[in-house]
Image 1: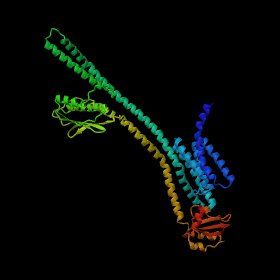
Image 2 (image 1 turned 180 degrees about the horizontal axis):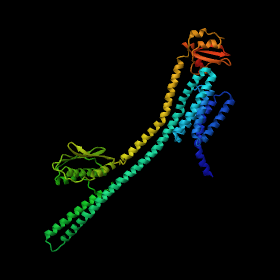
Image 3 (image 1 turned 180 degrees about the vertical axis):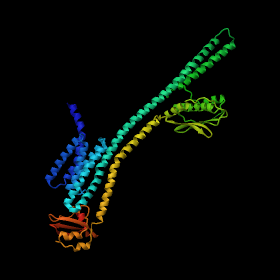
Image 4 (image 1 turned 90 degrees about the vertical axis):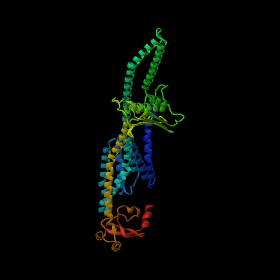
Length: 532
C-alpha cells in the first residue's frame, strides 16, 4: 500500500508544481483588486480553473490551450476592450505554458494551428461588437485594430512557446530515430567489413596452408632424412641441414604473414617493426630505395610503429609491382602528436606486370582509420605516393562516413519540419502586422482636430452640429483610462491637437444626451499622472 501511494505521489507532483507556478501571477494580480469579495472570488474561480486545466490536460491538451486563449481574448477584448491594456495577464501566462506543453506532447501541428485559428477568428466579431458598444461607429475600426494587436500578442505569447516545444519534440524524435538508424548503419557496415576481412583472411590462410605449408613440410621432412643419412658424404649432409634451416626460416616467415591475418589489435608480440631492416631487404632485392627518417620520440606507441611498418611494406610492394625500375623514397616524419609516413616512387622504367590489383590498400586504410589516422594514395609529381598520418594518441576513428551522413540528414530533417511549422504563423504575423500598420496609418492621418475649429465649438452644442466639424477618426488607444472620470453616461471622443504642446496634447469632447457637455484640452502631465 505504501509503495502504491509513493508511486502515485511521484506521478502527481509535476502537476502540483505546474498548478502552483500558474497560481503565482493570478495571486499577484488578485492582490491589486480593492474589493475583497472580487479579490477572493477571482482567486477561487481562477484557482479552480487552473486546477481543472492541469488535471484534464493529459486528456484534452488542445482544448485546454484553446480555453486559455479564449479566456485571454475575452479579458482583453470584452471586459477590458483594448488589447493594448489587458485587464489580466495570468490567462496569457497560462496560455503560454500550455502552448509549450502542447508543442512538446501533441504531434499533429495542423490540428493545433487549426484550433487556434478558429478561436482567434471567433474573437474578431467579438472585438468589433465590444468596441462598437463603447465607441459607437468608430468602434468598428478600433475593434479591428484591437484584434490585430491581440493576434500579434498571441503569436508571441502562445505560438512562440508552442514552436519552442515543437522544436524540442521534433529534435528529440528525429534525433532518436537518426541515432537509431546511424547505429544500425554502423553495425551493418562493421559487419560487412568484418565479413569481407574474414573471408579474405580465410582464403589467404587456406591457400598458404594447403599449398605452401604442405609442400614446405615435405621439403623439410626430406631434408631432415638426408641430413641424418649415414651413407651420404659429410658435405651433402651439411647442405641438407642448411636446406632444412632455410625451410624452417621460410616457415617462420609464413607464420608471421598468417599472423598479419589476425584481427586488428591482436598482432603477434614479435611482429617486426624494424623499417630500416625492411628497406635493407628491399635494397638487397634490387629495389632503388632511399631512406629518410627523423629521430623518433622516446615513447612511440607500438600500434603506430606497427602501422608505419605496414605502410612502408605496402608502399615498397606496390612500387616493385607497379613501377619496376623507379626510384622509391621512404620518409618518416615524427612530430609531437603524430607520425607521417610517405612512400613515393617515380615513373617506371620497365613495363609493369599485368597482374590484377589486390586489396592491400583497402586493408591498410582500414588499419590506419582504426588508429584515428588518415591514408592518402594517388598520383604525385609524375609518380605515385602513399602518405599515412598516424596520431600518437591512437584513438580509433570508427565512425563510418554513412553514419555521419545519417546524422546530418537527421539535423536537416529537424530544420525542414520546423520550417514547415513556422511558415504559417510567420505568414499570419506578417499579414496582420502589415494590415495593422496600414490601418494605424490611415487612422493617424485623419484623427487630428484643428485648434481653431476646437475653439469655435461651444459647450452645449448639439451632436449633429459638432460632428461635421470633427475628424473622421479618433485616437487609436484608450486614453480615457488615464484621465479623470467623465460625467455619468457620457460618451467621450479623443482627437490629437493640430498644435501639440505640453498644455495641449489632445482634445477630449464628451456628449450626454446628444449634447456636448465636456470640451477640454488634455495636457501631457495628465497622461503621466494617469499612468501612475
